[in-house]
Image (cartoon, rainbow, N blue to C red):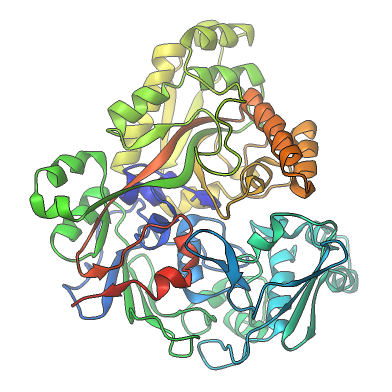
Length: 575
C-alpha cells in the first residue's frame, strides 16, 4: 500500500499510501492503523476530549482523499476502510491466512485455478442486511470497473477477464459491450452463500489479496443512493451510506476535523470490546505530541526532536514502544520527464544519497538505511545476492558527467515535491543538501498541501518531477513488492518507468510454483530495478510510539490495519 511520507510522521518522525505503500513512514501496519497516521495540516482543529470511558482516541492525521474501498490505495485510507469492512480471509498473529467472512479456506480445483468459498451463516452489514456472495461479486466487479478507475484494480488481473474489463476503452465501447466484458469476469456468486473465482493460472499470492481491502463486499443500493444514481463516484462514503460488514460503524465525519466510529452491534462472532474510536486530524508533529501530553490522545508517534523529552521523563519512558515497520521510503523520479528519462542521471542521484548519514543525523537513528526495496526479514529481501544501491559520490559524479551534465551543468531545474509539514521540510532540505554537496545540483523544494499531494501522486500526468514516497507491505509475498509497485501495469506507482524484462520476470515469478525458482526470478527482477533506478531507496521505517497505559494488550502487528481478531478482541481499554 502506498505510503506518503507525511502519513506516518507521527510514528517514525518521517514522511510516508498503497498505498498504495505506501503511500501511504513509520508504521508496521500496527502503526498504520492502531496508532493511526500523521499528516500535514495546520493544527488540532478540535482537540479530542479528555479521557472518556470506552473511547479510544487516535490521530488520523490528514483528511483521507477517499475511503471508497474500490478506489483506495494509501495507508491512511485503508486504515479507515478496514475498520468498517471485512473480506473473505484475514491474517492471524503469525501472518497465516485464516477464514474471516468465509466459513473456511476455499475448495481448490482445476490445478489451482478455481477457488470456491462458502460464506459464514448469519453475517450481516451493520444495518442488519445479510451479506451474500452477490455483494462480493459486485465488490470485485466494481473494483475492476474502468469507470471507477481504482488504484488497486490490477490486483485482480489474474482473474479470468479482469484485465480485459479494467483496461477497456470506455469511450469507444458501447454500454452493452462493457457489460459483456463485466459479465465475463471470473468472479461469480453461484448462490447467496457461494462465491467462485476462476483464475488464469494458479498463483501463490492471490489468496492473500482476499484478505485485503480489494474486492470487499459492496452494496449497489447504497453506492447508487450516495452518489445520486452514479455508481462510479465516491460521494457515497458519508456516514449515512457508508455501511460495511466490519467491526465498526462510521457515525460522524467532520471533514478536515474529526471522525467517530462505534462498535458494530451486529458484528460476529461478537462486537468489538472497544466501543468507540475518536479520530482527531492533527497534522503537525508538535501538536499531536502536545495533545498526547495533555491527555487528548491515547497514542502518539514520537519523532526524533521529541525523543529526548521521552527519554528524560520516567512516565513517558514507561509508555514508549519501539518496533520495526514494514515500509520502505524512497526518492521517486518521474522517468517521463527530463532529466530523469536518462538512466545515468537517475543512477547518479541514487549514488549521491547518503542514506546512513540521513538516518543518523536527520532521523536520529529512527530508521535503517535502505539499499534495496524489501526490508530485511520480509519475503523478497536478499541478504547477499544483490548489487545494492549505495552511497558513492565519486561514481555519482562520473555518471552525471557521462550523462552530459558534468558538475550538474546543463541540467534543467529539478523540483522535489513533498507533503507540507515542518518535519518534511527539514528532511527534504537534508536530501537537497546531499545533491548540492555531492552533485553540485540545486534542488527547488516544493511543499504541497497534504490532500493535494496525495492526489498528485495518484496520476501519472500529475506526478511531480521528483518526490518522496514509500511502500508498506499489504501481504507477506514478494509479489506485493516487485509486481505490485513496479510492473508497468501497476497503478500505484507513477515513476513512468517501464522494463519489458522486469515485467516478464515478475510475471513468471508470480505464478511459479517452485519456491527456489520463484525466488531467483524475483532476484533477477530486483537487480534490474536497482540498476535502472526509477527510485533511490532511502530508508526502512522504525516505529516509535507512546501508548497510554489504559490500552491493554497492545500488540504491534505488521498487518494490523486488517484488524484481525487477535487484536480486535484482545485489545481493551481500562478506565
